[in-house]
Amino acid sequence: MDLTDWVKLAAFVGAGLSMGFGAIGPGVGEGYAASKACEGMGRQPAVADELLRTMLVGQAVAESTGIYSLVVALLLLFRDFSVVRFIEVPAFLAAGLCMGLGAIGPGVGEGLVAGSACESIARNPETSPVIVRTMLVGQAVAESTGIYSLVVALLLIFVI
Image (cartoon, rainbow, N blue to C red):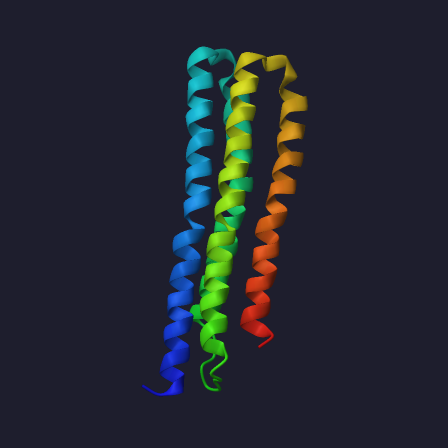
């Protein structure tokens, strides 16, 4: 194997790590939000529309780190391999791990927040505006760690 093969191998493994790990957090978080929305609809059918809206918004935010992982994976898969350097081998593996592992916490955390919001709205529907606003602020703060992972992964891919 020559150097180009090693760099391609690292990029492909990095892409797999990014997307493989990066799907865990959003998948768990979004599933939790959906389960809590369903429970709430079972208890309070009259607020099913509000619960559906809250669940979908919460899931959309929780999905963002999965999208970041996909972007990093695609950048690694479709990069130009005409000029390669040995330092790219560990950099591409690290970029995949950085984004993949960095997506787990925010995805789960944001899904937990969305699920709790659905649960709270089902318990006390008139507090919905305050709960949704608080959910979004909490998710935005949790999202920052996913953004940090994305920035570091992009630096590992492009700055080397």
